[in-house]
Amino acid sequence: MPNVIAINAQASQSIIAAQATSDDMLLESIADGNRTSMHILYCRHNVRVYRFILRIVRDATTAEDLVSQVFLDVWRTAGQFQGRSQVSTWLLSIARFKALTAMRQRRFEDIDQEDVRQIPDSCDTPETSLDRSDTSAILRACVQKLSPAHREIITLVYYHEKSVEEVGQIIGIPQSTVKTRMFYARKQLADLLKNCGVDRFAA
Image (cartoon, rainbow, N blue to C red; front, side, top):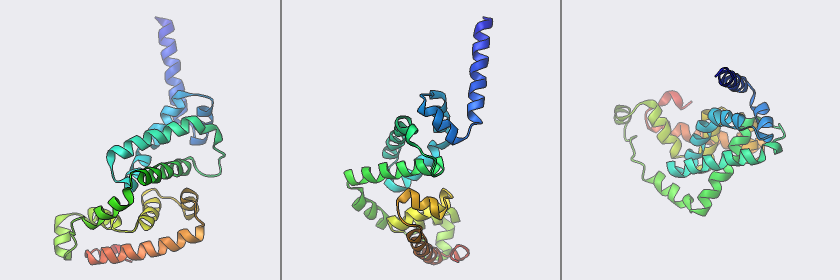
């Protein structure tokens, strides 16, 4: 029994130590086949990756499947991470590739646009829109009405708090293009919000 207690205590200490480890160090450990590190990295980032993918594919089941694929890739390719970006940026790059591939395979582009057009317009007047839902719900609805490229930029910058440089790395475009898309995305979003009576976000 004392041996079992000692082993359990040692395992607990290992888990606590791993939880305090940086993402970069976790990846190094994952590259060596450490499953505990893989579990901790997954726990840290799976929700963020899921939400990011869901905003692209707009299907919960597909998003869940793709999250599994993303972290399976991480397990297989952790040793290839070169530290040129944050681990979270690298994860979202993988997630984006998986999501866009899934959309192409299942022809989600046309479905996505049709869904956007069929979103009930709760912005008939400022009064009705604010009565039906809170500002956050209105913001989410307006973001969904943006073009896929603009919606992607807004999602990465505001929901995932990525810098212009990181967004460029994830999408694979120059920073100047990121800035241009951000400018037009914010302008379009501001117009949509203003039409919904949410002036304080329209600046």
